[in-house]
Image 1 (spheres, rainbow, N blue to C red):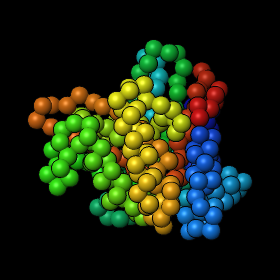
Image 2: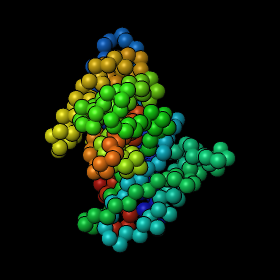
Image 3: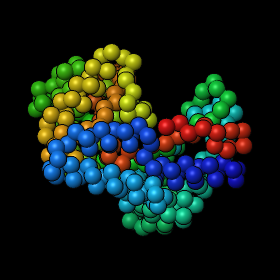
Image 4: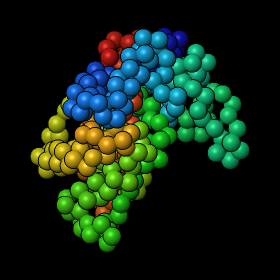
Length: 292
């Protein structure tokens, strides 16, 4: 398990310190769109400088290294208990090395033992697939953007949002409006239409595993994603809520079956520090390929 632990520590280090290429391209494109001499341009320039310094120094890109979310896909027979134990050991070691800040505290006592370990930290999602390799994806999701996630139950009288895609659109844009200046924008939205309250949020976070520049294979959801992205960037909220042309960098949506009595729209907000990375592991746990 030593090789696997080393691989997971490197996955954590790279996720914490280096944004993936698709996000880098999105940030640069957003910077190019902002008007010269504006606060929005200055904010995007500071973001770009922060990204470069973090990569150069191999240090966390944000002081809040976030909730630690592992998504593991493996074949039948993968020892999930052993993998989880190794992942916890890797998180503890990565914290000691400074790749993760000492962020995780006991919710009842407020105590911080400095390991980032405890109930719910890290969080591991295991999924079986028919391929022989193991793929591990990691999301580090900051508390500021987590605070502005939202869930709506439709119909919503105040928003005049019915149980249809038009109603979903109103709910999602309301979440963007309510988040302005508080979610470390420009942000990325993960959205789930349907499901129950728990699975809706779970599926919305899984959308953050998609590439920023991909397109939804479902034409209705693709239109919704592009419409929300375009409309949100016309609101004038801008980077960090200072005004400007870039409120969102991307929108990723899915739909899940629901009960007739319920119609939830769950929105997970990710900050500009879109820390998401993944690897394919070899038989001994070595890194064979980076996924982003």
